[in-house]
Length: 141
Image (tube, rainbow, N blue to C red; front, side, top):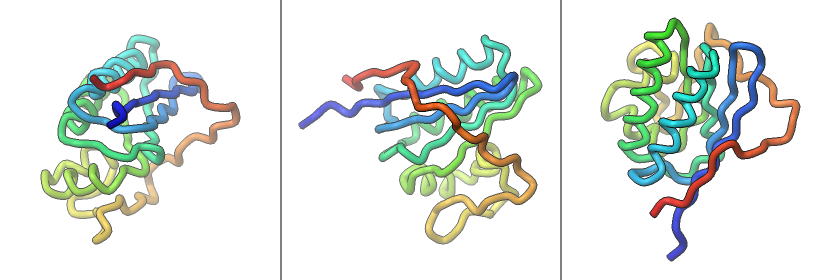
């Protein structure tokens, strides 16, 4: 069985970053997520958009990494939002009731298909005009 891998891409525009994750987020790869999001804060980024379109799986350890990063970002006066969560994460957000913390949605705004309902007041995901270049990559062991 192949070892799941997670690749992290980052594109900055002033004080805003688009972080794109690709692969599986679980117990072994969640520390990579936590480190990449912490690096955004260290670099002065205060608006972090996390694109999960290319994530195939995310468990509760991934949720924990996102909640930790969202709290640290909020403490620094910023905002962290998840975009396009995979079904596995959508289900966890629905069960825990914490989607409003990460998706910018009012309580109960997850769709029946477990995907996020777009918030019309939320800022759009920044346009990515350059090719993705991994900033972190690791094998989950």
